[in-house]
Amino acid sequence: RVQLVGSGGAYSVARDSALKLMSIGKPVIADADAEVQMLGVATLTRGDCLILISASGQSAHLSRLAQVAKKAGAIIITVTNQSANPLAALADIRLYSVSDGSASDMPNVVAATSQQHVIDLVFYTLAQSDKRSQDSMTRGRSAADLSKVK
Image (tube, rainbow, N blue to C red; front, side, top):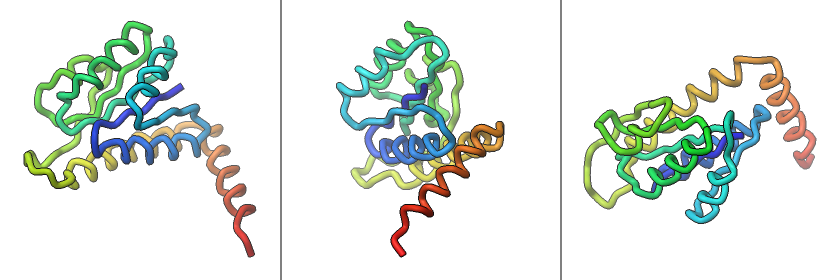
């Protein structure tokens, strides 16, 4: 099972990534609510995976989620900037994205685009890695075609 959590604007990246992983048959959860996130993480076990996406890696909430998941034996994957940060320090696998480094209130388009690109590369690798993932994508496309109104 995979749980994706995005901090701030990264939630849209997490949600999009969850939909892609579902399309290849992966059991996924992604929710914006902090309490639901903690409930999901509390049920992770060995062999499950928590993917945390944050431009800065400084979120205390995400760090707490990582600590709970790590204690349960789940694999922790982070997508953060390359600066040393508390979230990446908790990860089993560290993936890096770029950010523009600005402290403005404007959405960080550079970070979101970079995060999406990193996650899309992971998705593409998973989708190509086994026949079951490819079969799931085919069934998903067929179901989408059937649902179109003509």
